[in-house]
Length: 456
Image (cartoon, rainbow, N blue to C red; front, side, top):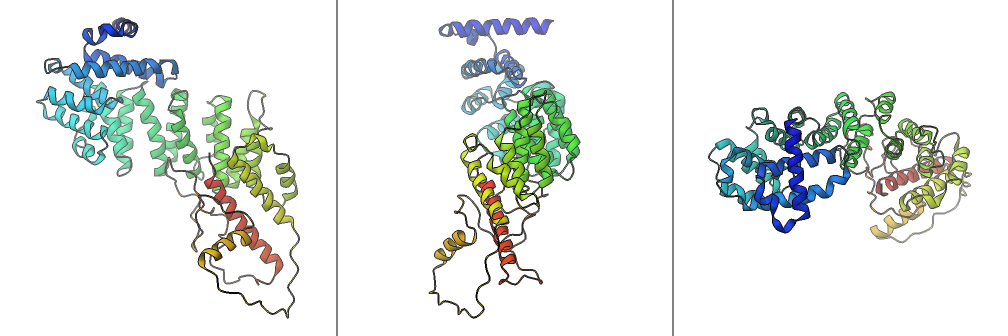
């Protein structure tokens, strides 16, 4: 009850300052720790989905910055104000304001000074320096408001070099600050780290917790990126039932978008079963509202079956897709898929005459050879951003991907690269059927590259 009254008073003062900014009322009346606490309350509301509070956050950051720039050594004798300075810095504050205020505060406590140095290094983009000074500090021994932020910062900084320790620190951040923007960020970052570590159980648990609590956060798009990448990387470890359980907590539109993105990425990696499942779920919809007319779901589900025994059905389905409702990248995919489907059902070329003498061909430059191969062998124009094929085994589709990595543009593991070494039982290159199969495989490689290069 007391906390609610204090919060109401603070918000009232802030509203007065917003209406009468020239009076400097809040800056003169409120202590730094009171302003920072108000900032945290607003940020927690935003994390819970109150996007209307975002303008107030901007105003509070401006007011808090002005108050801290005006604070003197006497203000910082109150330890709450110094902690508030550090929290402000880790809440998106101005690095120069924090650095100048720390120099005026001149903290005598060695741990406070180390945290201040770590925060400044973190803010100005010196992660190695931040890790060095923050590593010995145990967030659980600090006041909860400061400890939660220190745990979050340390966990974020150590995610690459020591992911196991990073996950532990992010768990501590959640424990110290439940229901806050700190917990939202810790959950969101844990999803990506768990996927990179191949920890399917933690990935599923953390994703479930995020969807339950912070689905409407303005940062939820970052969670979606990590979630889709994690589902692809952990497809052998996460059942379709578990995936359906997590997405069932989303609203129908978000669920559809997630499944469309999974279907597209699964098609990129040649995961035909997952692509078919995600496409079907995207088309199925909820509450009696199906998405069967969504051209993206129709396209992605067709990509995984473009060389199947039901190719005529696939060609018919591709022909009915409304091109006007696709993005430029997906229209290019549709064109490529239709070209491949046509090649699959095309009759093989006639055998060349046995006594035909080979024509004399003048030597060509490497550039000319590459361009001719792109036009003649692939039968499709070169793809901007596509990587050249290398005579090596394609990467495994099951290998974990970085949480925020873009869709891979390398050929899928389930498709034999055109430049892969021939097997001992290589087909006779004069056989038109074998030649057609090899051409189709090369074109499938190009579709994979187009998928990777196309926009999301």
